[in-house]
Amino acid sequence: MGDPAGIGPEVIVKALSDRKIYDLCRPVVFGDHGALDLYAGVKGHSLIRDIAHPSESQGRPGRIDLIPVCSLPKSILTPGLPKRQGGAAMVDCILTAVEMAKSKAISAVVTCPISKTLMHQAGYDYEGHTQLLASLTRCRDYVMMLAGSRLRVALVTIHCALQEVPSLLSKENVFRTLRITAEALQQDFGIPGPRLAVAALNPHAGEEGLFGREEEEILRPAIRKARAKGYGVEGPFPADSLFYKAAGGAFDAVVAMYHDQGLIPLKLLHFSDAVNVTLGLPIVRTSVDHGTAYDIAGKDRADSSSLKAAIRTAVMMARNRERRSALNA
Image 1 (cartoon, rainbow, N blue to C red):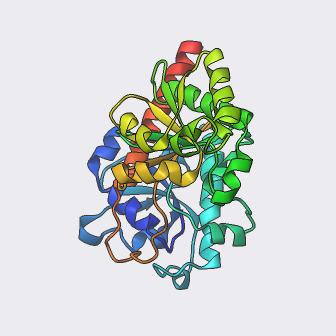
Image 2: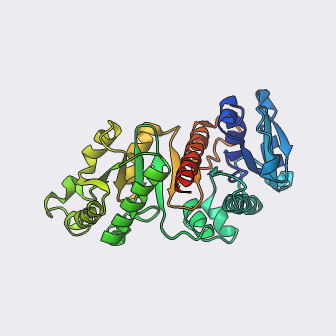
């Protein structure tokens, strides 16, 4: 559900009003009945049906199968006004869904936007969703990827100050990101022999050290190591021209050095339909690529396109994993 005071409940109801979603999967919502009820039934949206376990879901268009993880009082359910109690419920929904995924009761987890501040207040001191999920699944090697139909971007560093980025880069960190990204594109996205491009940290890819040494001392050695392991990796390329080529189909994904380097071009192309994917986890997890949007919560202005794209991507990833598992059995 995400934060009940954000647009998560609204985009869930809107997304699950699309009958095409039910052609792909049997969606089950982990959330609060009252939060969804603010939007369900309005303008012909779905009705809500409480269930105790995913096995009870019917996957019928017009009905939302809900596992009511929480039961929040109406005083907490004011759109646009986040509350500590709502944050605790937000985290409980994540914990419950992840446990269901780990036990194979569900095939994938799709998450709506959360408040990092509320997550911290609930006692979970993580940078965000990605780090919490990695901890819950005991996964040390994971990568955050943002994906759209024209461009996919994986990040070496995520949420940190820009001035900290150079000190966080290392040959091993860059290689690890390349390895996880390449393997996930094969396993989860069904892309044989994926082509990766590495974005340089510095302008003009450092201009042979004139504008920085990271390309020569960190990126090129990591790329050589990845290529020696059989991964299709090229670069480092100047970032100012790389994303244009990648969006044109030259590469299956770009590995960017820091958050805004990769997400500015990604959101320029896929502002409404990008999907956040956590690569390397033992479970399938996708997410919307937007925040809680408290300023428009409850105003019927939220766009569910990113959530529907996240659901479609999760289904694709789950099916690809199932096929790969069957082949290896």
